[in-house]
Length: 66
Image (cartoon, rainbow, N blue to C red; front, side, top):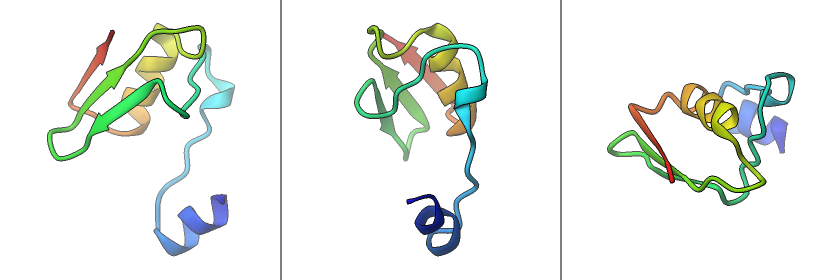
């Protein structure tokens, strides 16, 4: 998967696992890419530090932890 995103789609990969916080990407974050907004459902799968890490990694303009 990493090779697909790096080589085919030319995305820069960022490893959030080394940062403080919990940031599972399989559901808590819903992005409105055209507007640069992230809606992040705060659960046991993500905390504020993880939400902020995803905000930075995806270069969002606004991140709304809900």
